[in-house]
Length: 175
Image (cartoon, rainbow, N blue to C red):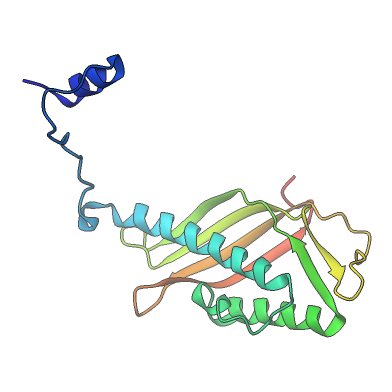
């Protein structure tokens, strides 16, 4: 009997395989077999990171009306994002770059089948700074740095996870 590893070895040696049958694939477990707490943890962190990614993308032009912001944020979180971008636009400021993230989950409610996840991040904004849109000059002398962010990510009635609130602490709060 020819196995998948035999076919690989034969192929590596230059000999043609004796058959052209496909090696069996390993199927992923059905989504219902995934632990709900692990799924919630993974989804919450992914949505949190996507929210920041679209925020900084919109920040490159201070587009406070970007429809992508509402794909990952709702309520207070969405208001904070749009208000910040609107203030930047009014001041003629854009953001260049994107921060890095070091995320973890600090709590989940309820623990068995979570609907609310608190994400803790130690974000580094050193490479995400403000510049004047008209001449490209850097705004201020603040170098950015590592700062703690706590975010609440909640499962919405339609089953979609979104960030509902977050708090950004001062630079140096992760150290």
